[in-house]
Length: 546
Image 1 (cartoon, rainbow, N blue to C red):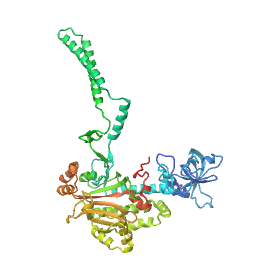
Image 2: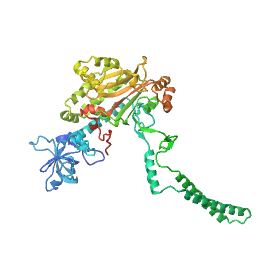
Image 3: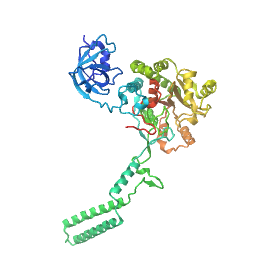
Image 4: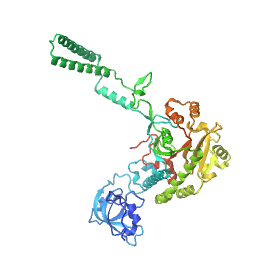
């Protein structure tokens, strides 16, 4: 029985990955294929459509189409032809397309195209965000990123979590650090007003006085006509018209008076910015986390998760930080810190196994070109139980590290673990992912449950080789009095969080959650060194291209 190529339900174009999957069983079928030229020689074009790493060879006779218009790297070609087996001497191709008709061509200016055939550094292609996905590296990263996103939804769906959408615009600072991007229309409105007043200056005092005199005159006319109405001498039509004139004159005077009050600059009240005049009538920000909003859902729906962009205005230029990044944030009802750690480990293992099962070709490419240990690292995560160590024990271990592992950052109880500390624990001490738990409360967020020692909180971080911290989570404080005391201790305002207290006042439950830095997970999987290379359009201090 003849095999059929798997194709999209609503498209005539067949994906190269499905053609290659079918292999020689598809020979003889006429199909339509579209993609971009990677290499060319004589009448042979290596065409890739982004569906997989491999290309398919188009065989185009010179009489069919001017080859000079097809051969340049980056040219798009949409063609119809028959799938045929290549000559036995061609060991590189599993199947090729003998083109019978060129349907569409997108040409390239060879003198201006910035990504000609050849190897380009990641730093260079980072300057071309609109084109860099055409490179093998970035297309492989995109497919790995896609696979991890699909795996995320699969994992939580299989375990009966509800996928929820939390707001990107928030009035709460989840982390309490204040490193937030403000959302405001005040500056834009001020600029618009300034430009408008330059074009149309505000009315002068003379203009207002003239308009006021007109109102008085028309009011006098109306009064006279109304007086005549008492003696049955009034012309009702004339009175109605005069009232209309007076109304228009009064409205014009009001507009002039209001316009005369307009002032350029940001609106102030008592010497401070008047946010009541802002779009949301209060200060608002791009969210640093969907957690607090997710907690409203966990209190009603049980286990939930959110997966979306988050933002932090941190002036960091390290290889692990972005200003706009993606977070996966599950929240679990009736869950303790122990439950939190189990969920986190299971989720990371699932992601790694998913890549091994569904994205191996792209992972092999990354291992070959960038990090030979990338696949072995995934297998290690899947096969090993994560080591659990308390923060206090971790500090002791770091202090006792051999002298050859001298750390630049100080090791003492009460400091946050630096990247070099995390990598020592995962890559040297244990050679495994590690879950560090029960951190000092001074270095953790206000919403984490304080332990009975009143020194630590029920928090945990999952740290992994190469990347360091991948997940941060905790058991949330469910006692309103304890939460209030903790916030006051940190000098936080209470009023903006009254709704958050309500969650503890009305049917509170033990609950826990965590956040996985999705971009860091892609960084961990691919073995690349810079997080800016695992997101299509990186945002960081000084750069927001496109």
